[in-house]
Structures are given as C-alpha cells and as structure tokens.
Amino acid sequence: MKVAVLVFPLSSILTASLHAQTQAPTAAQLKSWVAIRKERVALLQDEVKATDARIEARLDTIIEALTAISDSKDSKTKVSRMKEDTGRRLGKTIAYYDQKRAALREELRKPTLRLTEAEKRQIIGAFDARIEKRTQQILALNKSMPSHEDHERYRTVGGGWYGSEYQRNEEYEQNRRLTAKSNTQRDAIVKQLDSSIARLDRQAGALKGQIASASDPVQRQTLSAELAKTDALLAERRAQRVETLRPSATATHTVALKEAMDLDKAIQSAINELRRDFTALFQRYNTYLQELSTLHATEAALESAQSRG
Image (cartoon, rainbow, N blue to C red; front, side, top):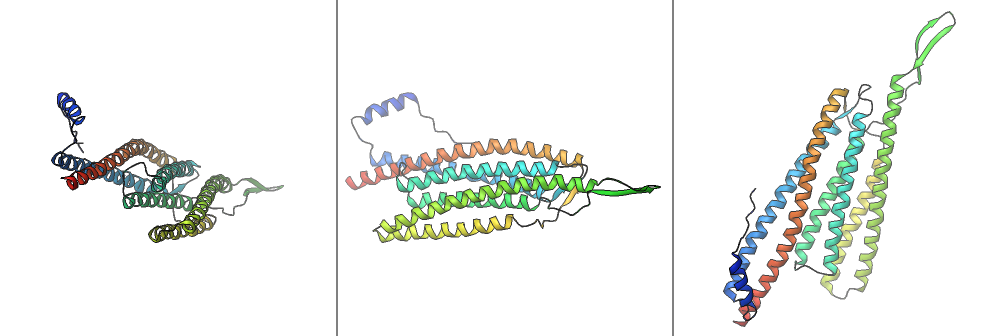
C-alpha cells in the first residue's frame, strides 16, 4: 500500500509562516486543511487496519498448526518447546497492548491529545479484544500440551534362568519429559492470569472510588459501565485460571522430528515478518493518534473562525 505524502515547496512554507505572524488563517484555508487532514487520517486508519489484519491472519495460522500436533518419541520435546516459546511471545504482546490501553485510560483522565471520549473508548475496546484473543490463543496452546499418562518405569524384555529382564520404558521417559514442559507452561500461564486478576481488581477498586466521588450523572453512568465490563473480565479470568489447571482434552497427532523442525523453520520465518509488522503497526498507530488530534484541533479552529465571520 502506498502512503500519500504531502510535499510543499520550502518557499511557500516560509512565506506562510511569516504571513501567519500577522494574520490568522482564514476560514477557507482552515476548511482546506481540514479536508487534507481528514484524508491523511483515513489513509492511516486503513493502513493500521490492514497491518492488524495481516498480523491476525499469520497468528491464526501459527496457532492452528501448533495446536493440532504433539511430540513423538522421535521429536522428544521439540513441539512442546515451540508451543512454550509461542505462548511466551503472545504474553509479551499482551503486555504491550496493555501498556497502550493504560495510556488511553490515562488520556480519559488527563487529556493531552484532542481526541473525543468516544474515540478513546473505541480504541481501548480494540485493545481489549486483542488482549482477550491472545489470552485465548495461549490457553489453546496450553490445552494442546500433553497431560500425565500412567506408564510403568520399566518394561519386561525377556526372561532367563534367573528371572525376567527389564529395561527403562521409553513411553514413561517421553511422557515424563513432556509433562515437565506442560507443567512449566501451565505455571507460567497461571502466573500471568493471577497478574491480570490482580490488575483488574485494582482497576475495579479505582472505578468504584471514582463512581463514589462523581457528581455528574453521565460520568457516573460511563464509569458504572466500565466497572461492569471490568467485573465481567474478572469473572472470565478466574474461570480461565480454573480451566488452565484441568487436564488437556485437545486431540492432536504426533509428528516426527523432521516434520517438527520444518514447522519450526516456517514459524521462525513468520515470526520475523510478524515482528516487522508489529513495529509498523504501532508506528502507524502513533502517527494516526497525532494526526487525528491535529485534525480535531484544526476543526475547532475552523468552527471558531466561522463563528467569528
């Protein structure tokens, strides 16, 4: 997608700057600037949506591929390690989304950008949706991890004059390796859910305090709706914590080491592309917020100029 770039001659910019010192922009000029900025904002918004959609499609493919398979005796813990690594990366994106979400919540309280409350809440809702989807993807990976199976540590391989002969059971050894990985991932997910529950608890407490001190009925209604949403998320996170501790029931098929290694290479390539897309997404997102803020400031200036004229 090509990005439209507006280029003005340097002499024109200097002339306009000097002229602006003695004369405010006319309503006609401001109207023209509003139209230009609207086009720029729409373009950036489309780019953000397109990049986000590309990221989601790639992640959906990775999660679908990983949750369908499990390790064989040949691959040992290769698939489990891939799932563990992917879950860890998804957790990092949740933390990043949460940081951006927190910044917009602070914008609601102490505005620095000229964004409407509806625009801020809409973007917060988009981050909420991504956080929830990443959480579900992590839980899906966890459910596809193998659970404990009962195997004898040793198996009989024959008998002789002096009794049966035994050797270590490969099935037992394999399940022991896999369940160790499963336990590590499950503990990490529970820790992450506990952190989310604690944050939502604090958020609910803060909202209750704001509701108690709010005198504006509209503000109280808005805060009450936010509290209800927070309480619903709390209930969901607690249910997810319980579900995480239950044994896995996801059907998978085992893969050989060669197949697991080929998939790992494909995933690593996709991760590199995702990293670039993720960086581009938030570069465009930050620019979008600034351009949207400037658009609203220009619209306010136009409205003021029209009321004077």
